Amino acid sequence: MPELPEVETTCRSLRPHLEGARIATAIVRQRALRQPVTRNLPQRVAGATVHGINRRGKYLLIDCGHGNLIMHLGMSGRLWLVNAATPPQTHDHFDLVLASGSAVRLRDPRRFGLVLWHNGDPLTHKLLRDIGPEPFGSDFNGAWLYRETRSRSGAIKSALMDSHLVAGIGNIYANEALFRTGINPKTPARRIGLTRYHRLAEKIRETLNLAIGAGGSSLRDYVAGDGRAGYFQNQFLVYDRAEQPCFNCGAPIRTLRQGQRSTFYCPRCQR
Image (cartoon, rainbow, N blue to C red; front, side, top):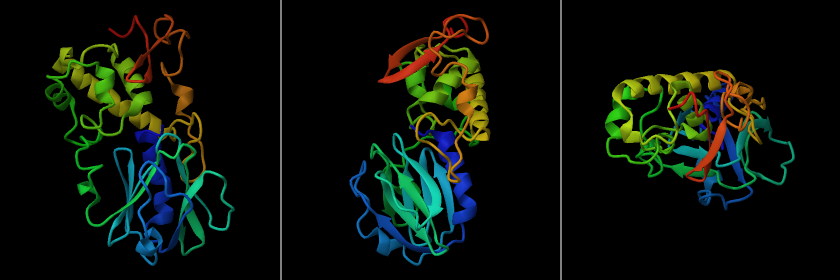
């Protein structure tokens, strides 16, 4: 699933092409995504000028002045710039067509993505209003993690993937940040002390920054808005490395299932 670094990379790569651009129309080839694409979307966006494109958690927000497109890449989606005349493929469900002749195209084989219209402030939408702080924001730090996990008996890995605690980290980067901090992913969140949470917050930001700098992780379908694949998968320390030697101590990386997601960790380095 595209996580925060992939969505941020998509946002940054599309921004130069979208900001200030005029929208000609939208083409909806398949409404049946995770939620149905908003009805009459072509009429809602036609003629609008894009005021900006930003990210909140794993959501992309395209400001059209009189309302906002809220988009999510789902489990396997990609959003990139094409010539509007390029013939769509089977899973190309949506185009935002620009007056310039380009289009922002959503390809989503599993149809878990979202294309929704919201009048007014998008942060008031029910999908976004309860999301926790952004990892790069001033209100996210070790004290926040410590305070918000005092009543959480579940594992810290699962807590980090809860968007109410922190926005957008996702499975890959929860694994990598916990390894960099030396915390076992099975540790109950409420048993971690303030000092370790300060270090974890730092390592979360460090991991995400490294991933953004590498253009995200391209494991299946993901490419950025300019069509380029990411390469952070070449820098994974534990994720998808089951039974391979730990880069620090040489012990075999172990794997387990947590919340229906794969967890990877070093039994020696993470305690």
